[in-house]
Image 1 (cartoon, rainbow, N blue to C red):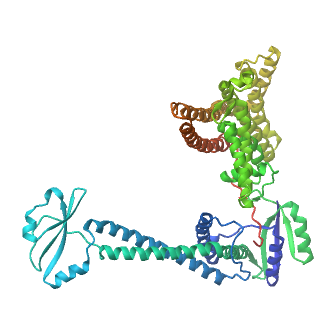
Image 2: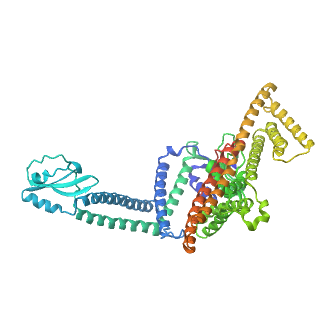
Image 3: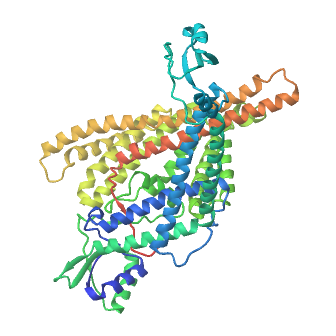
Length: 605
């Protein structure tokens, strides 16, 4: 990134901003808070309303199977007044539908209660009252109902439900009724009128849903156009808010960052129109915006990087550094070649139907599925079937990776990533502080690698020549001397030695715990394979004795349900645990700082 300052005469500032927006490469430095600007706050609030309604309408479009390319009527002269009116109409329709649904639920509750009393008419009760009699409603526990109430108050039993008795009394107006029973609060309408009202509410809800369907299908493009209008207005006013007024408001001062590869073109455009600019030195306190630059493979993993945090300007982009590891970790956790093949095929089919913006995610899952296919082929697991146990493959069963070897590989690949992370941390120290400060971190790397070769390989029954072992111990000894005596260049040797002892404790305890965390790769992959085999066994054993047709049907049901459950569990665990290993173990050893802010240039959407 290159840092620039622009100084423009106030009467020329609007054309200048128009030029900057056309160039679309300047990330404006924020010098004032959006929260302090009433106009920006109101635009953000309006965009939030649009975002909420857009999500609602997107769900309606998806349910109706509307193609993503179909946006309805296009409005070229969209303005803020038209957009706000459209938004108000849609929100009013949703609010009306919400109120109608609440009314529907209330009516259904009253209908359920009135069905206990039967299909009577309040009009008949009013006629009784005109004749000098009144009808009262009572409920009481069935055990407490007394038959004498029938004679005293003309009590009539209506219903018994869940040990509660529902009854009415018909007495002359003014007759005192002395019984141990509750007087329920009756709905305002009888059952017939409730049903009529319920039917009318359903029709109104259908009308509201039709209106929402119309907005989702025919006017969704207008809502998107309104959102773009608001975004452009917000960006423009935000640049004005970040502009400093100097020389009695006669000059406008603006600072921003430009990708270095775009700097020359911007300078030529500004020079052509005689605008003043100056390239500035980037200071350590500057929060320089981050624009990730990766190849086609690593770019697919950028959403994972952004999920945690963007790197800051003074450290390496972790995306290409962890991408191969993440792909491998996913394959080890998924652990089944058949499931991986399903992921590849499903993503290939979905690519034909989804928006172009979503296709990179499908490409990412295709790579992850490929890793699962490779791991499944190595371990001999396909849809829960252990290929090593298939008689037809008896000649090649020794070539499949066993569970013990897979556990060892998980630990080894974990150690490799941890050591790689420490190399990245040492290189970052060199970038930020200088060569002499990275000597001790690299010494620790050489020490760990040498000890891992000298002690780890013999533990895996890989015997090394005595000379090689001695050389490794010698490298480790030299590395420890450097790590103990030169970990803080320029400081007292005794202080360095004490710091080295403390670093040794942290290194030993941290390295052991971090490495053992990678056993989960083996455990999760093994669990998925075993669970798939269990469902295969259930499909065979539970259908024994059935006729061939029924057995095939039942086996298919068990296999489909079982493997669908296992596939879902494998997918979740194969995403969550590799993420944890990357964000916790690798980021810690690579000393990842993060905190970067995404590059967002001022341009017209």
